[in-house]
Image (cartoon, rainbow, N blue to C red; front, side):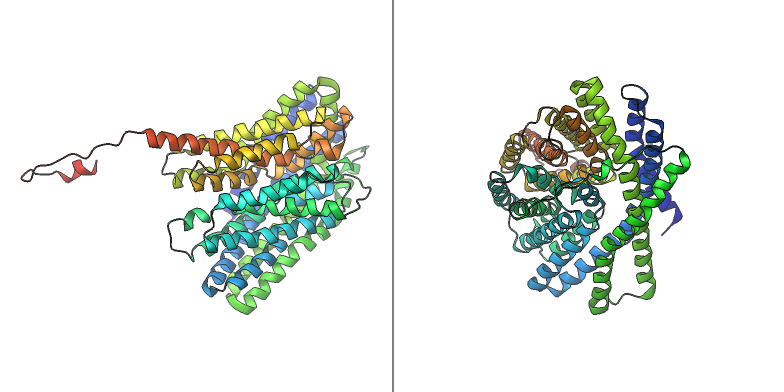
Length: 507
């Protein structure tokens, strides 16, 4: 791994975190002042998030993506469907356990034990990763899998305990984060290469969208059997610090806890890969050591990320939400959330990658700039609507039912590739900054308004994951109509004895 590459990843992480930090800083010095020790703790947490995300994405690129590509290629060569499906389930479970977005969400859900929630969500991803691989191998259209899955989801949602409903949909949004996405996408490309038809490339997209359904179903089913418990949200675990030494000690006391939790997250997928290597890959020592170096960097980044997010970043989001809702009122809160949502998309590295992919597969018909604008609008609107929900206590299904119905309906009128990209976009848009700051902000707003956290604050990740389904497919629909209405340029006729200049024909 090159030093310059690590520096670039840290700069990317800074572009993701610093715009949010700048907006928050402006709010802390104007609309909603906070205690000095809280702001300093937030500043330290922001720095830890920058380095944590930088280390993590660098490590994931050199370890998790590489692992997924190697295992996907080896499974493809076997051409044994039961083996591909079985190992896909195991990989889906193990990789999701280490997802940082899921770790943050689990720490903020008060009525479900963190381990129980993480295990439930991981099983859901494993199950639906198996469904994804089966769909690719059989060539089943994505829209039919999504239609059947969401019909089941909303049928269960109508009878679900409200305390589990919003959490279930949020769980679907956080599972397609920086740990899970590269490995799952690499697996999908490898398995799709078995087929030689023209739709094979398009079918390698959409895995993130389908995999996000599994956690929703799993948590909805958990709600029917799990009794719940009293707990605290990690964003609220903050106290006053008399000086900077005491604040620093608070961070140091949190580090051993996250060292252990992250070890338990990363160790299973590493152990599984090492066994897979012994049984099938047999990598050379140098290649194996490079992978282990990537895993080490991933682990270090995960520890920094979770410590900074839970000790400093999330806590200020909660308190800032209370202050804004209590002082400035809900119109200001809504506007602030929309601005934060816009910046989150602007700075998310995975969004830039996806928009360039869309420009490439559409042959320039949909530019990366148009795609990014569609995501900007989607996430800004979703963040604003989430704050309205938190203040007025509007049921989450009033947004999700018509939203998904419209998204699935549009899927029958746009090319399949746009539906696949739209559902993937919903996954990459709900990145780390949503769970570390926007969710605590919504919780603080909800507390100030006297609402119920579980029913009114949770659901922000779900809305952010849903809105791109509408905006991206709308872009695809408009693009398809424009293409069909474009006049067909008639071919020029030439005489039998006429000299033809080939460069003129090429034009």
